[in-house]
Image 1 (spheres, rainbow, N blue to C red):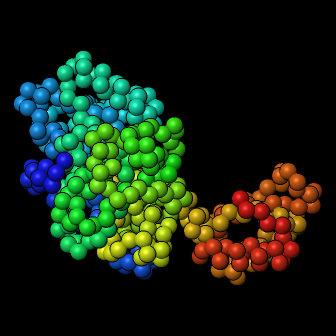
Image 2 (tube, helix red, strand yellow):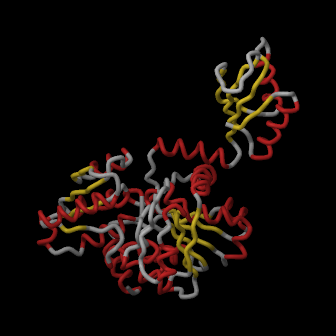
Length: 403
């Protein structure tokens, strides 16, 4: 892979994709002490960077290969990229998606015209079926990341980064199989060899750290992350070789950090971002002011996708609020007599709490006959405020447990 390969991909994609926005984040800059920009691939066609590689790979198929059609396996973003690219190129596409894939991603993939077949519980199950379909029907398998053309296509994002922030010094890239990281690194290092490029993985699905340590791709034993877009059990051979040679490092982030970043991006950057797309931002938020010591600015954090199930978004917002100390669940034991609930609510109002939900419970283990348990869901202003609310309740003589 060279810069010329990425430039060749850019020529093909120029009339298909428009450069995604690059937004300066004052909120992240204030939080970290280093200038931060967000590369908004969540606003790309089909909702992620995947369209870049999928279209470029499929555009290079022979006429005979195009007539045979294509097949892919994906939980969502790659599926949508392949489906849309196939429609634009006039190619028949079959996509295997796991049972349990997000309904919006299923609907979008079908909406772009692909034939969707749901099978198994994991992407690995889908890949097995897709390869069997390729063998039986002659369709061309379009891998999500492990192909030279895919990596070259994803690398066009790196060209845009250099064009939009010419003085960039650090690029942080959400990473699963490594196609986007390898492509961006090839483009960025080809144009600005001094720029640091770092991949960021969900720590519950981080195959790269161990793989790089032993010198070859090694699958993780298990994965358990909300960031399905980067939940890849084994690095691809093609991107791994590039990452091992030119990428400056791999960082990992927790599930709590990802949830916090999704909420932050929605509130402060006005961007709807899926968990996988928020990993780079999560890393910066984890570092806080340490970021200005770790990374030279300007820093570009790639938001790699925005295809999120609204139901998942609701759960993540709730978790993000909880992690940020802005959503508080309590169980308060009070005497079972008139006026006690009013007293609790009045105290909470005096402390500036917004009460979202109240429930009475009289059948609780450890509850005295003359007591009632009140479950409270509260909106607060942060950890300090939450602590003050709990202390105020206890000072009034109530027994308080966190839910």
